[in-house]
Image (cartoon, rainbow, N blue to C red; front, side, top):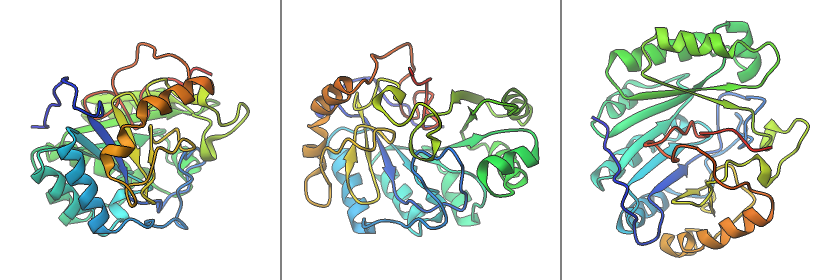
Length: 283
């Protein structure tokens, strides 16, 4: 069973962390907020750096982490990091495109306390490829089915970019595959997702830094993976707890920049509905 995060507040106010362990990805999705691609890299954080962050997170009252990228399965130390987080009694989720999963990682993902999340775009292979930049439909679909068969907790999210995208059909297909939790979101104009409105705090959901934070591949800490321009410190130079203490100020700054008030969104993290995004932007 997946670990359940209790609602009590930790001393820092932050109970969930995104750990963005790499900027490398096999895909080149045209809407990627992190601008990840095959040309990306794992950043300047070493295995020891990430292990120290996990240790400090557990000590600071964080109860869950999500490993994300880029594509986290491309990081050579993902298995070690997941197991270390489990040993610290943290709930773990891995956000992966499910294009390729080694047998070693399948065994790790099947551990109690680990869950998976992925994005899905269409029930049409050509349309799916147009969005991801690679012929990924068959592999992702097959690995979704494999996760369901193996009993690994799995959430999927359909990102609707408008036009003739078969988003509703994609959701129906996921239900037919046996996925128990299917979410839905709209395009965020952040990173490669910029279209007309442009990147701004108005593209956020309003919950950045509210009990959550993100650590990026260079060690910088942000209120969330979407608010990438708001830096609250760097774990390579500071204790994690000191960077988390700056979250209230970061929220105030983002609100001043146009971040909308919180709506009726579910919480961020595995206990909520985050894929990694969980409710519509307000712009």
